[in-house]
Length: 506
Image 1 (tube, rainbow, N blue to C red):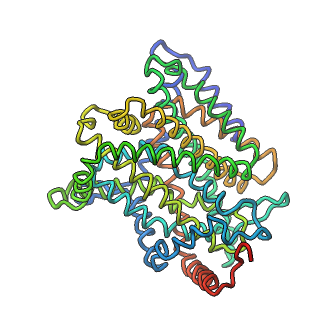
Image 2 (image 1 turned 45 degrees about the horizontal axis):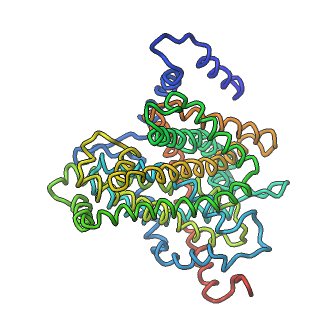
Image 3 (image 1 turned 90 degrees about the vertical axis):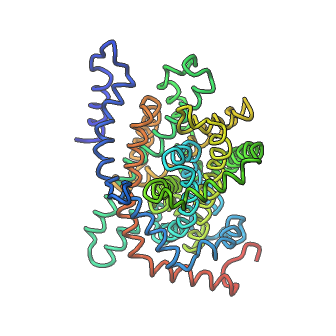
């Protein structure tokens, strides 16, 4: 069955099936998605027992890879950090190089795809489930993830393809295909690349828009009157407004997305970080106790069979979900960068998990532990972004409003970045034609509106399952390419040190 007929059938089922007095449109959509989310989650997040805790194998798969690449690459996440900043500042920008966007625009686009609602609400969920110790392991996971990101983004640039219209296409589907094709197995290469591309397309419809628009909608309704809000029963309308705004940006392709991201990302990051720092400063007396609680909960022998292990699992899962290292999605945005040096963009990508997880998620954690914990907000039954919002409001009654603005910007920026990721997966499968691209963009915007009509549980399960599924073929490819990437990075850093690399202004 083609995409058009499948979508028509789904639409007819939802819209024309008779509704009883107890059923709403939203409940129909939830009923349609829930079985799919449950079935997929049970497969992707299959758990093994560890000290009485269920440990998802997919999280272990990502965590081991992050540790391996950190050690194998000689702690490049530390050694290459300064050089990464110099690249973003334009010190090595070569205007004659191939590509469509600058180093700064590339990292801004990729960061916009990772810094989302999960950085605000997801961290609160992690702390509620795993305790304060989850914040410690979240930081550790973010630090290790920087190395994974470098490997996949280096490969994204190295094996990108140039299209007839001058645009660039790159990402895991291309370097996975290349690895097998170059070793005499082109059909298997195409199959593996196709599996990644298909998973990416499906996953982007969850993590890239449904989850983001749903949480933005919940936060917006909360600050505009709750159940009395005009949008309380009009999720579809809120979704259409967001979809229209996203559509205006993504219609112009990566250059339009990168220009918007380059303006939005710094603003939203500074807005949220400054707001969080103010709230933390107003609970300054609690900071020493909060740090002690976070570290103590992460290592406490008293909870070794419970809280500590749970903190590790939840912390790593939230961090890896947040920064997407190992998923391979960010390498798609980095592939469009204007450079002839693949390792240069790999180094730039080190900044993503640092900004996303080590900085923003840590600030969210400190807001919760310094404010929500000592003031009993954890006992009010709040979860996700509602808990973070309550922590902000505890000190400043109107603080949830700038938080809501940040949440809306996070959701918007994540959606435009993931639209590009999904588009490249789509064109890998169906070709680079203009009509083909417009069809995908229409489907993507439709799912943004759909996300505002589905309950959080279904959206979260669906999003998590899709994005983690993508990691299976990608991490496998990263292991296979590891020696090649190591040589690439070592050679590049040696040439930079020797002054052999283009330096802007020379």
